[in-house]
Image 1 (spheres, rainbow, N blue to C red):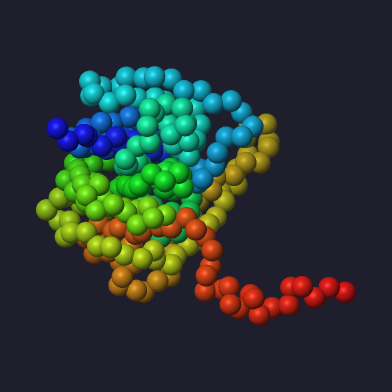
Image 2 (tube, rainbow, N blue to C red; image 1 turned 180 degrees about the vertical axis):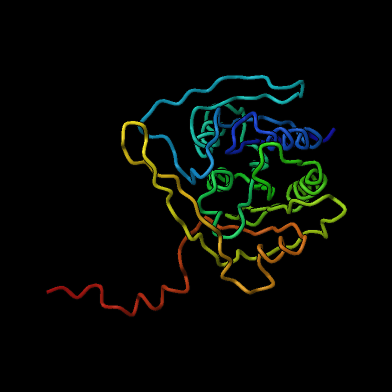
Amino acid sequence: MTKKPLILVTNDDGINAPGIRTLISVMNTIGDVVVVAPDSPQSGMGHAITVDATLYVNKVTFDDGPQKEYSCSGTPADCVKLANRELLTRKPDLCVSGINHGSNASINVIYSGTMSAAVEAGVEGIPAIGFSLLDYSWNANFDASKPFVKQIVLEVLKNKLPNDVVLNVNIPNLPKHKIKGVKVCRQAKGNWVETFDKRQNPMGKDYYWLSGKFVNLDGGEDTDEYALENGYISIVPVQFDLTAYQALKTLNSWNFNKTE
C-alpha cells in the first residue's frame, strides 16, 4: 500500500477563514493533513517571526475532517516553524499555504504572510506552494479553485520542485468554465502608490489608515499580472536566495577596500 504524503496546511487569514477550509478539504483527498495556522488574521505580516513574546498553540476542531488542527498565536512563519520543530512527528512532504483572500501577484509577494509561510517551509527544505484567489471578500467563492489546486499539488508531489524554489499561485476570480488554464510566469514589475488617511480619535490624537492603488509597470505578456488579467491562473517560481547575482561583477569592480 502506497504511503500517503504528509501535508502541512497553513495561511495568514486565520484558521477559520473560508480559504483555508477549502484548501484543507482538497488536501484531504490527497494525503494526511495537519493544519497549523494563526488564531487570528495575519495579512501583510510578511516573514515576521515572534522573538519577544510567548507563543501559544491549541488543538482545535472546526469540522468533521480527518485532519489534525492547531491554532497558533503567532505569525504564518511561526506556524511553519512550530509545526516542523514541535508538532509533527516527521518532516512534511509538502506545505500548502492559503487559499488567501486576495492577490499575492507581483510585488505583493514580499508583503504576503501566505507566501512567507511557503517560503519558510522552503527554507526548511519542505516543498511548498502558496495559493491566492483574487477576491478579498471573506465570503469569496473558492469552488472554481478546487480542481486546479488539486492538480497543481499532484504535479508538485509527482515531479518534485527544484531545490530552494517555492511556487506562488494566483487564481483569477472567475467561474471555472471561464478560467482558460494555467501559465508559468515571471513576477510582474509593479508597486503600490500609497496614501495615508489621517484622522483623529475622540481624544484628539492623530491616527492613520494605510490605503493605496496597485500600479502595474510591466508591459510584458509573460507576467503573472498579464496572465491573471487574461483569465489564466499564474504560477511564479519564487526563490528565497535574494542575492542579485547580476550585480556581483559590477560591485566587485568598486574599491571598497580603499581606506584613508
